[in-house]
Structures are given as structure tokens and as C-alpha cells.
Amino acid sequence: MYPSDYEAKKTIIEVGKRMYDKGFVAANDGNISCKVGPSALWTTPTGVSKGFMTPDILVKMDLDGKILLGKHKPSSEVKMHIRVYQENPDILAVTHAHPPVATSFAIAGINLDRAILPEAVVNLGSVPIAHYATPGSTEVPNSIAPYCKEYNAVLLANHGALTWGKDLIEAYYRLESLEYYATVLMYTGKIIGQANELSCSQIDELVEIRQKLGITAGGIPPCNIEATNLKDVVTSENIQKDMIQQITDKVTKQILDILQGDALCK
Ligand SMILES: [Zn+2]
Image 1 (tube, helix red, strand yellow):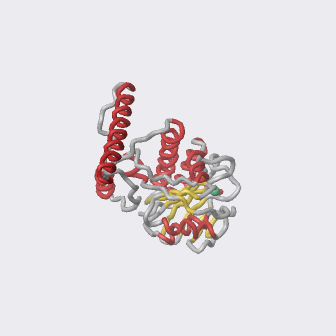
Image 2 (tube, rainbow, N blue to C red; image 1 turned 90 degrees about the vertical axis):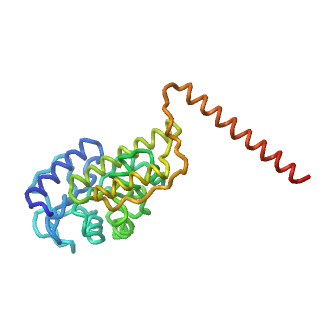
Image 3 (cartoon, rainbow, N blue to C red; image 1 turned 135 degrees about the horizontal axis):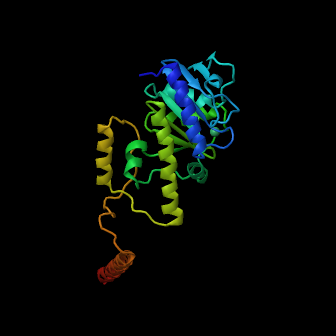
């Protein structure tokens, strides 16, 4: 259920510090919020580093955006948090940050839905990219609205990341998972240059686990029928042999297809 005012403020400060220490936010970037009742939340003020916050600077608001407590002005991006709560009442906390790798994917226009890590499929799910909107504008909440029920996180095109959860720690861990997932995708996709994606039946099993854990959102990523990760890889020699075999099979099939085509033409 809802945390107390004291607990919510304490966790916001702790999460802000971790976000800053991990390099998910630069300077005064990012914002955090946590619901403490059906129409009440605590959030971070504008123009403050999330790494150095104290409880007295936090702002209490209602879901209409009215300030209930606090001397500071809330972030203009709190509109996007409020929209998440309006779209999905099961969500009790939201984090927004600009983690560099995930943000680079948001900039490249590459969504995160490749099934490469079981943990990412289970706890985070696929992460779509919401179209670009000027930070702080009313178009930002509109852009993320379609994703608040089906997903656990969304990338904001050319801006950053937004994650949510049933409590603030879950929302924050999803931010960590998101950046980790994006980092591994970057290494395998752009630096390492290859990745074995999970097969459809492997994903089915993970989705089943996810449902058993009570996680009802996250989407289902596209998948391959055939699993390509079922062999032990002990030496890199095996990978080369495997690649040569695959190429030989492909060429043989192409030659056979051509020969069969020729036979049909006669
Ligand atoms: Zn931002």
C-alpha cells in the first residue's frame, strides 16, 4: 500500500543519490515521484541536483498538479509523472533520468525489445520509444500515455528514460535494469556485432514466470522460432567451425534451389 510521508521522502532522497552516483543524471537533471495516497504524491523540486537533496526541499502535490506542501517549485516534468498515475492507478512511483546509453538508443530511434537477457524480459520487459516532444511541454505526457499500462518503462526520443513500478525501489531498479540492458545491447550490437536472441518458446517460459511473479505488463518481444543459443561454446574455434558449416549449408541450399529451378524450366 501507500508509504507514509516520511518513508516516501526518505526513499526519494536515497534513490536520487543513487541515480546521481550511477551517472544517470547530470547536474540538475531527472526527477522522482512517489504516491502517498490516491491523489497525493511527493516529488523533487526543479533546479536541484538529485545527488544532494534533503527532505525539506521536496514538494507534495495532488494529481491535479496543485501544490499541497513545500516551499519549492516542482519540476516542469512532474506533468509526465502525474500522467502515468492518471493512466494507471496501480503505479505508485515514477523515475525519470537521462542515463547515457539508454538515452543514446532513444536518440538513435532504436527501441529496446531484443530478447537477450532473461532478467530484462522478466523484470523490465520491452521498452518502446515515445515520439519526441519538448521537455516540460504538455506534449510529453501525451506521448507517453499509450504505454503506461502495457509496459514498465519508456524511452523519450532524444531525451531520456521514464520507469515506474508498484513502489519507488521497483521503479528505480527498472531504471538500473534499463541502462544495463541498453549497455549490453550496445556491446553486442554495435561493438561485438552479434547476439543470439531468445527463441519464442524461451520467451514464452519467461513470460509465464513474469505472470507468476504478478508482473502483468512488459509486452512480448519479437522472437525466432529456432533457438540459436543451445550449444555450449567452449572455444572460439567452435564458433568459426559453426559459421563455416552455416555458410556451407546456405550455399548448398542455394545451389540446389537453382538446380531445381533449372529442372523445372526444362
Ligand atoms: Zn528530462
